[in-house]
Image (cartoon, each protein chain N blue to C red):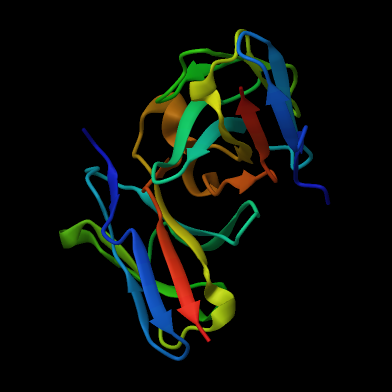
Length: 114
Length: 117
């Protein structure tokens, strides 16, 4: 099983450039999430999708947009990258409710904005 | 603001020492509790989880955690650490009944564990 797959693994952007981070899960999970990880800050939720067709803001949504393309895929877009968005981005998925809230994580995307 | 607190930023131990990492949360009601581990350069992996029942939870690799509801705590323990336990450890909580956010994990800031051989 692939689990949660993220692409790309590494990316360098110039300030102002745009890009989309892709995420797909093969566990038939309802909910998907995008987190960013910064040193000393833990993981902070950017956006989530509780179910197909819905998306909601998390703790740090500014500068990002998301699309829940179908049940499997959840993409994160940076419209105009800024150095403050240099981070490691993790996608995760879970059943979404009750005892299904255990999240499974992708390998991460290390993004550098120069 | 409601949160998850991990008390130690960096813990350094020698092999065979005992480990206890603290975690407190500030949510009322029923929560789900997790400990995740992140080995250097890797993604997060689940160590153990608590949903209900026995408050002493056993996980992988000899780790265990105790849920103490009255203290809003979920501390991680291991009787004897190994060099291979060097990693960052994250406590996480899914808050109770917030509709679509019910599955969201709220993370602590993490504790780096360094085990000296």
